[in-house]
Length: 607
Ligand code: ADP
Image 1 (cartoon, rainbow, N blue to C red):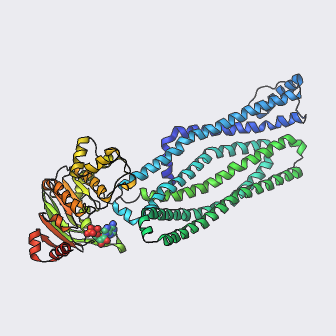
Image 2 (tube, rainbow, N blue to C red; image 1 turned 180 degrees about the vertical axis):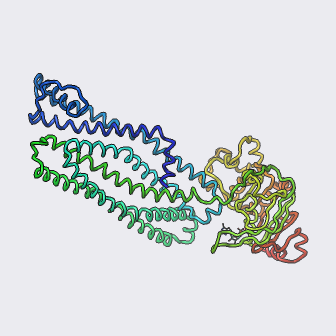
Image 3 (cartoon, rainbow, N blue to C red; image 1 turned 120 degrees about the horizontal axis):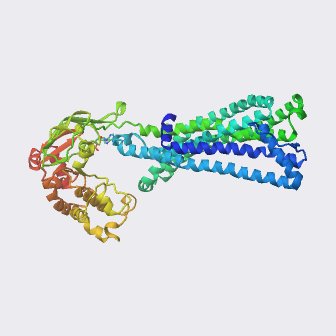
C-alpha cells in the first residue's frame, strides 16, 4: 500500500530533492544558531577564552571555535563587552533567519507534492468511479463511497503530508543534533541514547491505540454520510411520512458512537505531549546529576557548554517524537488509503475484449439467444431474466410490457452492457456485444429512462451532454421534437437557464422532455424509451406520441410502457412476467388470444 502511494511521489523527484536540501540546511543553520549561546553567555558572564594568536587553518571544530574567540577578543578589546554582545546577537539573528528561511522553503516546495498527490489520488478515484459497472453501486452504499472520496482522501493527504514533512526533516535534525551532543560530551550522550528509545517505546504504545480506533472511526464516518445523503435525498418522504423522529434517532445513535470513538482517539492523542515533556525533565535532571557525580565538570565542560548541551538535547526530543508518531500516522493513513484503493481496485467486471470491433450502425438485427441474467452473486443472487429469445430487426418497433418487476428494464440494460448477461448470447448483427468497443456500442443507443438525471448546468448543456460539434439549430430542433422548446423559451434565460441541482426547479414532465431531447439529439441507431413518458399526463403523452412517432418509425426502437394505449402500433409486443416472455405478437393478435395481455389491457382501459 505504502509502495503505491510512494509511486505518486516519483512525479515530484526534483521537488523532493529541494525539500531535502532545504531541510538539511535548516538543521545545519539551527545548530549554528544554538551554538551561538556559548559565546553569548561567555561574554555575558565575562568568561571568554583568551585566544591571542590567530589560529592556523585546519578542518577542525577547534579551529572554528578558536578563530571565533580570537575575533571576539579583538572586538572586546577594541569596542568593549556590550558591542561584542550586539555582534553575537547580530550573527544569531542572521543564522536564525537563514535557518527559518530554509525551513519555510522546505515547506514551500513540499506544497506542490502534497496537493499534487491529493489531486492524483482523487483523479484516479473519479476516473474509476466512472468506469465501474452499475452493479458496483447497488452493492455499495453511496454515502460510503462519497465518504471515501472526501474524508478518506483527506486523511491520506493529512497523514502523507505530515509524514513526508517529518521524513524529509527529522532524520537530519536528529543526526546533526545527536552529532553535536557527541561532539560536546561522549559519555553523557551515550547514556542519552539509551534513554531515548525507551521514550520512543512509550510513544509507540500510544500510536497503537490510535491506529486501533482510526479504522472504526473512518467506517462510522462513512455510515454517517450515508445517513446524511439519505436524509437529504429522501427529505420529501421523510417529511411526508412523519419519519423525522425515527430518522433522527437512527442518526443520533451513529453520531453517539462516533462521538465516543473520537473522544477516545482525542484523549490518547493528547497523552503524547505531556508524557514527553515529563520524561524530558526527568531525563535532563538525570543527566545533570550523573554529570555532576561522574564527571569532574570543570575539567570537561564549562557551565556555558553544559547549557548548550541542555538546549540541544531539548531540541532532539521533538523530531525524535515526530519520527515515532510518523510511523503511526502512516499506519492511520494506510487504513484510509486501503479504503480508497478498494474502490480503485474494484473489479471492472464489464471489460472490453482485446482488439474490440468498431460499430457505428445497426445493419441487420439485435438478437437475444436464450439469454439469462442474474443480479448479484452467491447467496444474494437473483435471477431476473430466464431464457429470453427475441429478435429485433432494423427499423422495427418492439414494445415490452408486463407487471413491474418483470424484468423489462433489465432486458434493455443488457444492450449497452450496463450489465453483462449470465448465460446465452446477445448479438448485434450476428456478433456478440462483448466483441464491440464499449463506447461505440453505447453510442448506438439513445436511452430515456423513467428516472431522469439532469445535471446542475444550463438546459442547453444538459441536452448536449457528452456530445461535441453540435449546432444550436440541432439542439432546438431536438427540443422541438421532444416538445420542450416552448417551455424552455419561456424560461428566464431560455436555453441558458441553469436548472439547479438535479433539475429540481422543473416539473417532472419538463425534466422528462429535456431528457428525451437529449436522446433525440444523439440521433441514435436504436431508441430505447424506458417508461419515458410516465411523468406526462394523458393528454401531453398523446401529443408527444404524435411528435415522436415519425422518429420512432424511422428508427429501431424498444419501448417499455406502462400505458398500453401508447404502444398499440408496435410491430411486436412482448409480455414479460417474472423474467420470462409469456406472450408475444401484435396488439390485435394478443387481444384476440385473450391471455395476460388482454387482461392487462382491459383492466387498464376500464380504469
Ligand atoms: P421492471 O423494469 O419490469 O419493473 P426490472 O428489470 O427493474 O423490472 O427488475 C427485474 C427484477 O430484478 C426485479 O425483481 C428487481 O427486484 C430486480 N432488480 C432490478 N435491479 C436490480 C439490482 N440493481 N440489483 C438486484 N436486483 C435488481
